[in-house]
Amino acid sequence: MTPELIEDVTLINGPFSAEHGDFSGLGVVQVRLKEELPNVLTARVQGGSFNTKRVFLGWSPDVDWRDMFFAYEGSSSDGPFVKPLNHVRHNVTSNSTWILGRGERRFGLKWNGRLNQFQSSGQLPLDEVAAGRLDRFGYISPGDGGDVQQGRLGSYWRKDFDRGTVWKADAFIRRSLFDLYSNFTFFLNNPEVGDAIQQHDSRLSQGANASAQAADFRRRYGAAHLRGQRAREPKPGRTARRDRPRSLQRADRRARRRDQRVGLRAAAGRLGRRASN
Image 1 (cartoon, rainbow, N blue to C red):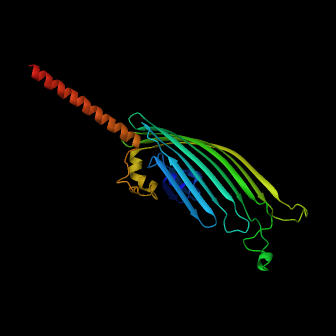
Image 2: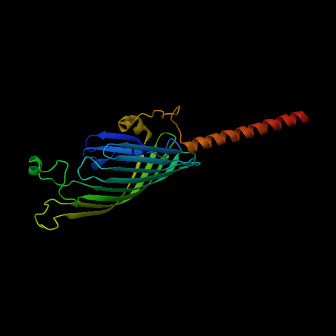
Image 3: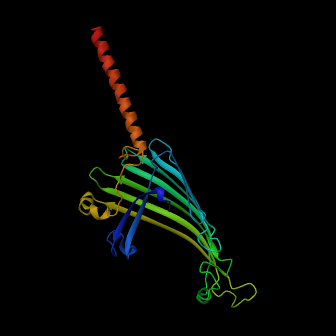
């Protein structure tokens, strides 16, 4: 998950909340992603120990009645091990939200694709490490590691009513492939090439959710739902956070200019009629 794309996090402690039912045995962590980025273009480059590198690129264009962004995150690290971890991660995320009606309805599509590849030190005999013949960050089997591929497409719809009632619906479909290469017994069963195995996992999952929340319920129990949300503070370099999306602000400005032009034409017409009289 890309940190720059997180809007807020909601924590619900305790088992079996009324809202989530048996999907919340120990609690619920809700992570809500942004629908647009604070700037049109965003770039970040980071580096650290063990040949660790990270880059983030984001593009959030100004489109009327639409919030959207495209983001890429790439990172790599070797870790502190004798055999380099060679961890490489690519993550692509996009969002497009259409603002319908007068802004009370929203429909959005979100897509995410990721690729992870890594090597690992695998299993180590504790006796060999204790005897000093094997480094605690060393390895025996050179082929341990794995790779993960995953894609997810989601959609959501929301309608806000004048009295505070909210209708929401969302759905998703996800495809993931996971290959893990490991060696638990080294050369016990096959002294020549070793006992390495491949574990393959292929999954296709989908789900949907719909909810309606009345205004009275939100006023009475809304504080519990907002527990753990981050405060909406102004971004660095900006005077204040927008209360409304950029697309709605642009529409408001155009409407005000249009009203001003209509008012000026009407005033000019009245002056012309008085002059003629």
